[in-house]
Image 1: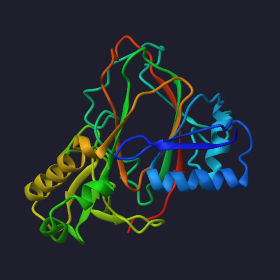
Image 2 (image 1 turned 45 degrees about the horizontal axis):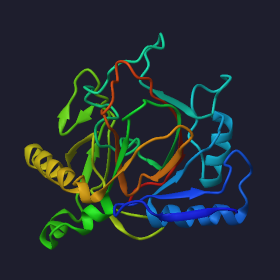
Image 3 (image 1 turned 135 degrees about the vertical axis):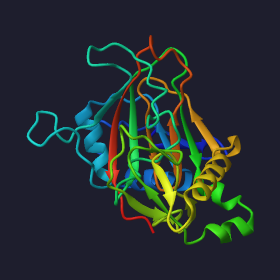
Amino acid sequence: MGLVVGPRLSAAGGVAITGIDLAEELPRDAKQRILDAFLGHHIVVFPGQTLSRERQYAFARNFGEVEPSGQPGSKRYAVAHVISNLDKDGNPVDRSSSPVGNHRWHTEKSWRAVPPSLTMLYGVELPSTGGDTEFANTHLGHAALPEDTRRRITGLRVVFRWGSSGGREIASLRNDQSVDHPLVRTHPDTGEKALFLGNHASHILGMPEAEGAALLAELLHHTTQRQFVYAHRWSRGDLVMWDNRCLLHRAVANYQMGKDRRILHRSVVRGAVPF
């Protein structure tokens, strides 16, 4: 049958691709079709895959430099990260109250000078119900802003810092290293404008902190409205890749996190300095 690109999954984005085994070497024409779907729909779902962490890493390398996992020289250096709700003894725990956790809207590693371009998650072990991941399309969010708001925010820069949450600084987590990025960033491949904000956004340069925090909260609320959001309901074997340059995402706390196990493998592809 070969590779099949399905219809768009929601108004906010998403498309499923079937008829391909990601554990095998990716043909050149398949790579281009995947890239086209990725740029057109922002989220690509590959259902029914069987991937080791090493094969996931090999697939991710088709799209750029993969940020390594673990320490150099370790046995599993450079393979996919393990993302789970398990503690050191392998027991499920509820971390949804963490102020910098994955359950808050964020974009990958926004506090870095060079944030990732794309992320891949592979579903290994999942709750029987719930455990969804939601994606908010910040290009659509920006396009839907009133013209005067778009003019107001053009040229503004947001300071990102690990340990910042919704304009608040979490003293026990704060890292004094920070970076500023444009609040409205330009997608390097499509030229589209998108909002760049979410958890880890500290404040807006040149603006009183309270005013900047209020603006960031207003924009976050706007761009995470339901019409801009795609919710992915996981099945074991799903590999989902998404574009960090025009999306926010969060893990949804809609399952028994202290009882049900949720394990995924993550690959992150290096991006470029936002502009």
